[in-house]
Image (cartoon, rainbow, N blue to C red; front, side, top):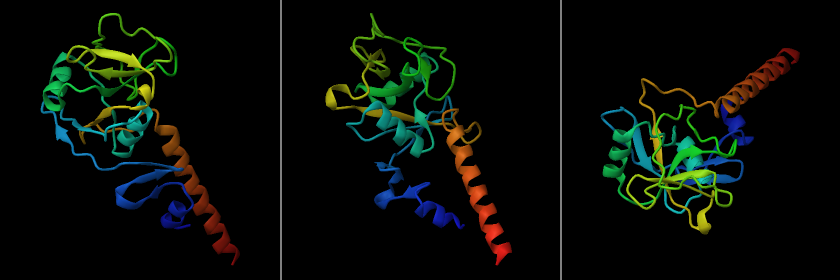
Length: 192
C-alpha cells in the first residue's frame, strides 16, 4: 500500500492550514522558533489558551516537547526571551503522584518551585513557570480554570535530536504497520 493510502486510512493525516490531525484532534503547526546559543536547542510558543496536554501535543507535532529546564541559566534565558507570562513547561507527575518527571525523558537535575509548591491541591499534575515571581514554578490541573496557557516548546538541536521515550512505541507501531501492509501488498501481487 502506498504511503498516501496509509495517510488516508487515518494513521496520520495532514489537515488544512498546516494542521496535523491525530484521530479527531487537530493541533496548530505554526510555531516560530528561536535558538538558544548556550544549548543549541530551538524554543517557541504554542498558541494561547491550551491545556497542558494540548500544548504538549502541539510540541510533539512540531518535533519537540514542552520545555525541559536544566539549570538557572536556561531558566533566565527563557524569561528574557519569552517574558513573564505563565507558561506550561514539560514537568509532570501525572504518571506517579509526587514523582515529577520531564516529558522529554531527561533527568530532573534542576527545579525552581515557588515557596510551598508543588502542593498537590486538587488534581495538580502539570507545571507552569512564572508563578508569583519570575521563573518560579507551580503545579496546576491540566486545564486551568478552563482557560489554559501557552506552552514553551523545545526542539533539540539537529546534532542531539532523538525520539522521546514516549514517542518510541507509537513510531515503532507505525513502522510495523507499514511493514505489515507492504508484506500483505506483496503477497497479493504474488497471488495475481
